[in-house]
Image 1 (cartoon, rainbow, N blue to C red):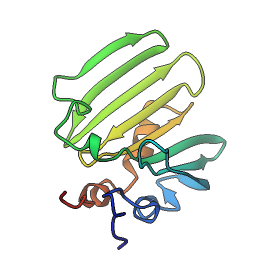
Image 2: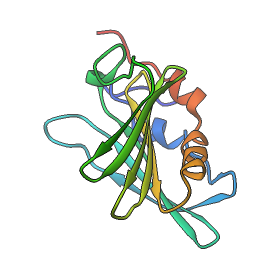
Image 3: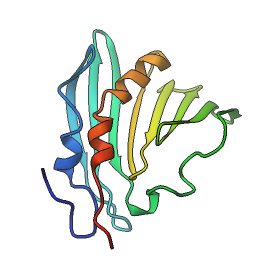
Length: 153
C-alpha cells in the first residue's frame, strides 16, 4: 500500500486502488488524473464509466485535511430536501458519510456526492437514474477508502 505524501495528502495510487475496472454492470471507459491545485494539495481522479448506452462520470478526490470529520462539511442534522436555483438536492447522513443527491435542470441531470469522514469525496454524475448513480458511487471501495488514515500532525 502506498504511503501518504509528506503533507498527509492521499496519493493518486491510493485513490486509484479504490476503483475497479467494473462496478456492477458499469465498465470503466477512461481515467484522467487531475493535477494538484496550487493553493491546496488536492488529487482528483475522473473516470468515465459505461453501462450499455448509458455513460457516467465517477470522480474520486482527496479534499485534504480541512475536510476531515468532525467538521462543517459533514452533515449532522436530519435528512433535508430543498429546492435550489439550479434544481433540487437531498442531503443526509449514511454511516460516517455525508450524501448529497443533486438533480439539475441542465446536464448532467443527476449527481450523487459521498463525502467520507477522512476527506475523500466520491461523486457519480450522469443522466442515469439516481439509484443507479448511487450504486455506482457506492461501488467504490468505501471500506478501503474509510480505512485510509492521514498521519497525525
